[in-house]
Length: 327
Image (cartoon, rainbow, N blue to C red):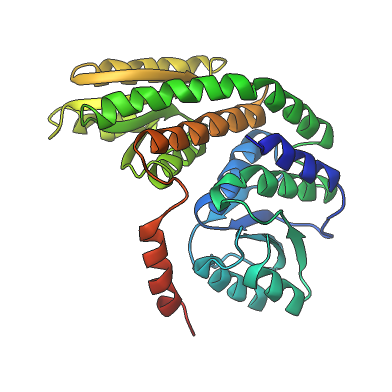
């Protein structure tokens, strides 16, 4: 609910950070909620970017990285093992490297190697800090001559989100109730169905329901879904589904693709809820959808009597990761 405040903070620093030079591509290195930032930048770059944006959610740095690559190492905590591993490889390369975090080892590495570091507010849940990280990077790219979103557009998106936060909360409450009744109460398989270029938003939603609500969620993306996954619905093990359909009402082809998906789901015992995105452009639609999905996943956790902030299995993995990536 404080996302507008995060955006305001990023806007106050808009133009403060920049990188010099010409680049052939932008590479965003990050995991989980930080990696989604790269996914959203990639979506924006499809129609608005002058150079491609790639996302790496791994400790492995691509072999094409060279002096013509701008690398953005993003980790809210600054202590993500995979990101730190990739960062050290990036430092050893000839690429230009920028780090983004609320502190941690990532910031220390940036100071040690004299890299540009962009700080974001501390004290947040990493997955809830999406606007702070995303808008900080959008400001950096805009100031550096690789604009995906202008300062004016970022400000307009802030006003849009402020005007639609109450509506997003109402929709989130409806979704949480539907999922609680249909997925939890009736033991249905939870499926998020959407169309390109909303892939990353569906992934963001899956991650939110994974972490906050402690649910397994499947993601179906049209039109690729029509060329493989659709066949799995001919003879599925379970025939009980709940589908959360995310659509852009201005994308006629995408809307019709999801309508066709619904026909396939309806051949089984399926229940559907359609989330129609609001917004005047793709940034506003991504932020509105992210807000709805984030709020609904937290509301669902509360309905289940679970703590959305607690992620026991991630904690177990981090303990093991310190051994896996330790040198």
